[in-house]
Image (cartoon, rainbow, N blue to C red; front, side, top):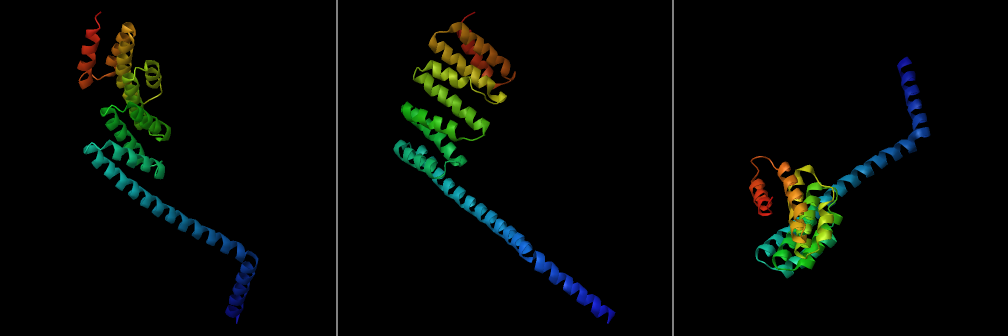
Length: 210
């Protein structure tokens, strides 16, 4: 009987607990389940969207290899619209910009590179590449001040030599020989002794004279 009485007391205590806290506990459990289901659903959705973006990007690569600029433009625009935060959209924009540059369509190339800079997120290397290519386009368009402005933007230290080298090119085109010489010298300091870029920069520096 003592055991039965103790058991009954435990049952009553449980009933009292659930009577007082049951709805709250059930709500917390339900919320946790919904959160988990929502999280897994979001992961599945993201995976699906990434797969779709990858398919479009693969098509863009094929079209670029075939030299089809118009098709690349259309597919890149679709990717930017439907998957703007995807790395595939930024990579497609870089690819489209290069193809457009090769075809002499500097306006489209410039627009694509600016899109990458605006939408590339926090990928510093991606942004650095976009700025270098944008500065190259601006140099080709003789927009020297705009090119220098891009090259003055923050970027990873590993890109210093490339930024300074291109800055030298812009300054040469603008007629600032002394400034170009200083920029090439600064670039050489940033290049490793066995760096493949060193000889190229040294040749340009020597062409400017002492």
